[in-house]
Every structure is written in structure tokens, then in C-alpha cells.
Length: 185
View 1 (tube, rainbow, N blue to C red):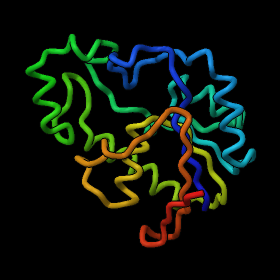
View 2: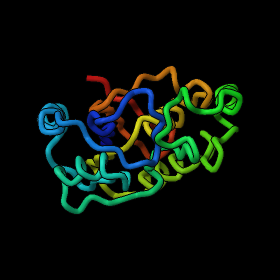
View 3: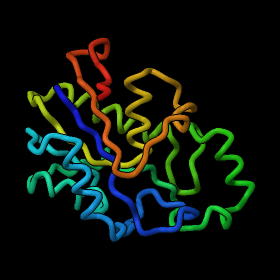
View 4: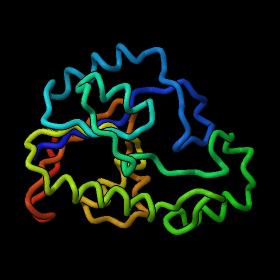
């Protein structure tokens, strides 16, 4: 099964703002970003899966009006920190989280382990599908957790993996984890 994974296109938000599951507007470059994407991936898919957030759904429906919304593809929930400037978050809480973001959650948010469990469930569900060509539109945290699953690396190392806006990742999923492959073009 060929799986193309896309991080949503650029956003209209200051880089110093903490956002995860908040709705954030797309940048004015959406049309250009979409055209660029169309040159990197097939134009037809057996199924298109998307995060329920507008920044992903808007892109997904350009490939299929029947895009399947899956909440497991949501970005990490930053709870009380959502839409706050990183500099405005209590430094004690922030430092505690940064020391162990795998297990520590922001207030009323989720930790990385919880996100990874959602992502792993999604991947295993895909493995059981009869599709041959799938598109997944999601977020950087989700994509990094997918890499952690595929490469069997510790979650604490996922921020070493760069995931840019509008970036496409291609994997070939086998019947089991040993058969999974990363496709590099």
C-alpha cells in the first residue's frame, strides 16, 4: 500500500504562538502551495484521510470530496497553552514539560505518549485496509509520531525530524512492520 502523508500548507500565525488543536487560518499562499503539492503526488487516491481541523480538511477535499475525517490525526492538544505566546507560558510549567514532553502534559492538554497512541492506532487501522494508494493530510506532531512508529525510535527523539509545511512523505506499508519502507525520490 502506498501512503502519501502531507503536512498542511502554510498558516497565517506568528511562529511564537503555541497552537495544536486550535483552528488557525491558512496563509494567503494556499493556492500556490496546492499547485506545488500537485506536482509531488498522484492526483487520485483510493482514500483520503484528514485531521478534522480546517487547515487540513481544506487541503484534503481538493483531492477528494469524500475525505474521511479521523480525529486520531489531530495535532497534540496543548490545553491551556493553546494560542498563547510561548514566552507568556509560565516558565516553570514550560520547563517541566520540556524536560519530559513524552510523559508530561500541558495543563488540560495531552502528552506525546497519548498522541503517539492515537497515531499508532491509525497506522494499524490503515494496515488492515484493502487500499493501494492513500493520502493522509495532517500535522507535524502526527507525522513525527508516524516516523517514530515506522523507524522504531524513542518518542523523545522525534523533534530531530524536520517536518515543513506542505511537505510530502511517502511510505510503502507492508502486511507487517518489518515490510514497511520509506520511499525517497
